[in-house]
Image (cartoon, rainbow over the protein chains, first blue to last red):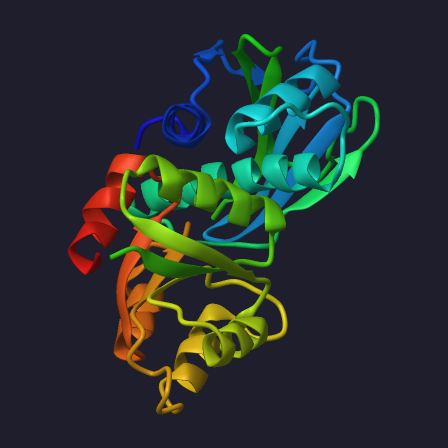
Length: 153
Length: 123
């Protein structure tokens, strides 16, 4: 099976190419939390089954506003329900892409409902022994990152 | 003749995004109605002239599967075609939806071209 980081990168590229229409450039996956992204908004979605964990989309305000504006086809000036929902939907779609890729390797997962948190530099934490990484992405509206912490059974 | 569409999703943002994709697909849509869950969707179907329904699966109050089940028992609306929109791609959930009358599914993320391909035959 390819590294899970690759599935996250490919799923994110597909989401942005098909529904957001912003060119994004993936960076090298980073182990741990020091991604250098000054996040203001984080959307998280739980994963259960053979792979358990949390997928999180970390966005600075400018990136969150720019991405939401591109998704809706309109200017978005401040973080509101649309922004929270839009970034949550990105978490949902990336996790859905990961679910499909894992299923092709006979790894069954189920997705929870996304939750969005506002706050500076929010990071998730799990029990000892989990694996975690962040894939950083560069975009014209600002950098953002997608983090996965997980245990594979 | 333009087709009236009902979008069913608990996220108003997602309804806006899907509505935008429908417009971009180049198909001849008329009015686009919205509902936040299956219960609201049934209410809209009873009141408005809807030709096609696009429905999420995971929703509060009445989810997409429960909506299909309830709709299939109502004579006036049971034949209106429903397409499921979801990140769920498992044969089990889509198979269950189709067994309850769903005629197709759009997997998120999707392009306007994909919308055209899936919905085009029903326009």
